[in-house]
Length: 94
Image (cartoon, rainbow, N blue to C red; front, side, top):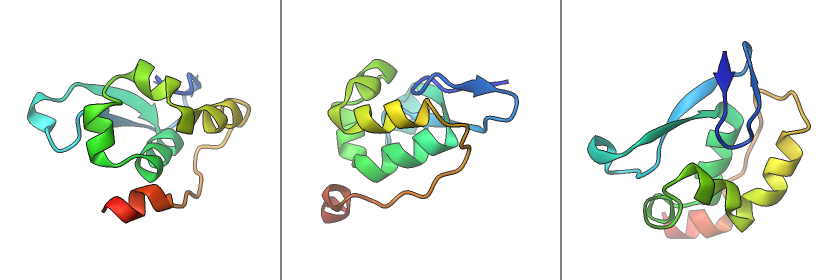
């Protein structure tokens, strides 16, 4: 059974993925299980540098202003796949 540390949804049909809390430093990075929609959303909203420097724990990610509205929405759905657009903030820094 999959369980997401961000949205806290769980179930046998919930696809989960390993998210490295410190991208680009995988050898030393702790990992957490997140559902596929949350993982897609994280990488659409945050640069790897932001994830590594400021959002390197599940608690920090759950508390991030950019995630608040999304987490509130996804918790009320049964969606296991979403379409995300990379934010201008992330696009400009890539």
